[in-house]
Image (cartoon, rainbow, N blue to C red; front, side, top):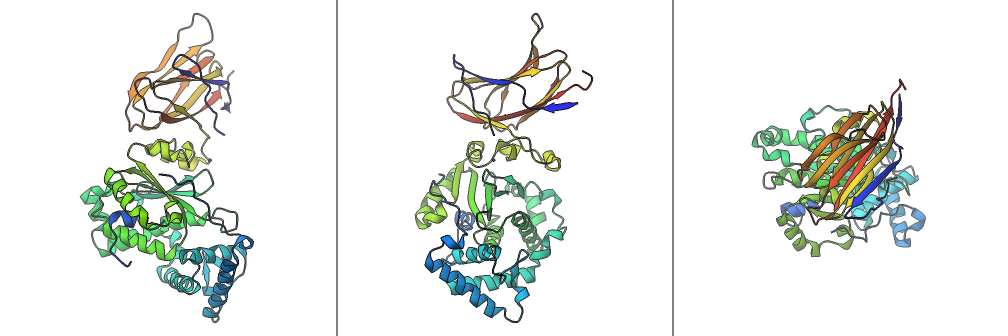
Length: 424
């Protein structure tokens, strides 16, 4: 049996004409809920990844880095081995140590004394908390794995992506089970640190490498009042001990009141902080996430192709992206399918609300077209289609998405694989 995903393929865009679509090739005040969510980190084009090449630092920044090294060495003169983080000795004088030290300096605007104080406190916390061994622990939150907070895939620039979705806690029974008392809250916070440490484990910690995460927060159904205490504690813990670890924060399914409150807080945020925020209103999750993350790495509930069952099967098969204009119908034609071959495909349109169908068109004249999937209206929140078909004769598969009843342009993605019969 042989697999191929490179059969001849064409896409037909119908208003009345044809259009080719591109192929894919990756604490001074009490904080409110919005400020709490945003305190840790419209897309701002001024966003720029932090520089960790010492040779490119300003002279004042180089001086601050050297001064921090000297002060840190003096602070740990009797126990230099205690000055290490994520397995990296901070007194080793190498590039990896510089990356970590620069994160603390940037978090304190290169004020050396403040950065040293923050770093020493963080080292003490990591030792007391057991952060270096937390990945080995089973904290018993299996029902939250892949649902509440989880690392999944990478963005197009190689940053690990952390998803957060707390809508499950609108269920009072679930909320009580996780946050019912102080001990339960402490255990949850420990689990949340564990999730973050998984992401940090794959960072490069080197100049020019991937040194930070992308965070996607789903605000749909989030019980803001009930989660305020937990959110404040998570924020405080992350701000104090994981500085400059988030390259970009993407908020999806943002309710109207959140957007309004953000517009009120926005003038008080620095340009650097605002450049890390992406705010996406409810219903635009796929359109927003496709700008930063490949569709095969986006969870199916957000308009991507990534399913939980894909996780143990290695890297995901690449998908092709395309857009469907309002009033347009697109036909994806997968040609060159031989008799006895099996084609398996995935297809999704962000915020569907259109008609989808699939049919097999035999090459032989006089053969009947087979309606593999009859035309049906796809709901706005439906996940990606996953289906397969084994042909008895050679021909082509045509996947159709009909957006003629809508004026809204939509993002979409598909992928397929053809397995030729081993008996032919």
